[in-house]
Image (cartoon, helix red, strand yellow):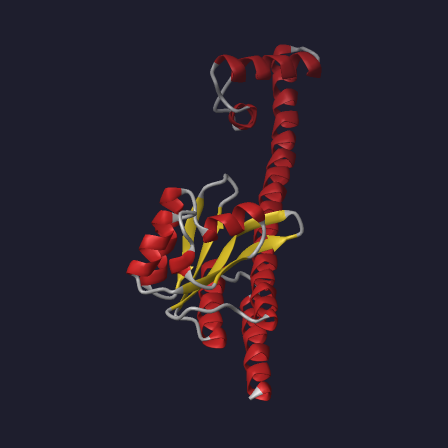
Amino acid sequence: MTKTREGQLLETFVTLADTLVADYDVVDLLHTLVEKCVALLEASAAGIILSAGDGELEVMASTNERSRLVEILQLRAGSGPCVESFTTGLAVAIPDIDNTGDKWPKFRQGALAQGFASMHAVPLRLRATTIGSLNLFWDRTGGLSTADTNTVQALADVATIGILQERAIRESDIVRQQLQHALSSRVLIEQAKGVVAYTHGVHMGDAFDKIRGYARNNGLPLADVAERIVNRALTL
């Protein structure tokens, strides 16, 4: 039995690793994660809420509509174990939802209405950065063992690394594009300065002032004005 469980866990990590290929789909990664968690931990449902970085949380993946509705309910209320796991960066275990008292009344009511009796939320966290939470639901009461708790957190950590890696790649691509645009623009501006300096018989510095002044007065990007000058579409 242990061997079978270890095999399932290994297969889950391999599947997640295989998902992290070039140009991988983050949404597909998250759906793979919740599906594997449900199978591995015999959960009734699982879902993920994620922050885009502006503090707003969204439901990004769910194995069924039941868990999705409970997570949306928490996001609208601004409270609940899923939200708390995100805001604190800590795991939140609810072995008996019916006995949560008055702490999260809307969550308690909504979860029980969907037939859930227990749940466990773990943060999607890498060091000081928390980007969401992975949330597991069961139709029975009871908590996770220490080993299972560590397993869930490890799976969440793999997904977090993948998401942050994708964000870093995307942001670095944006920076690279901006740098390339700046370099290309600089070449056009130098060419335009030469055209204006020759046309008006002025120094390059004065030519640049004329180009920049025209761009500012007309609310145009400097590079666009320079390109029009170089292409003889604009004469200052």
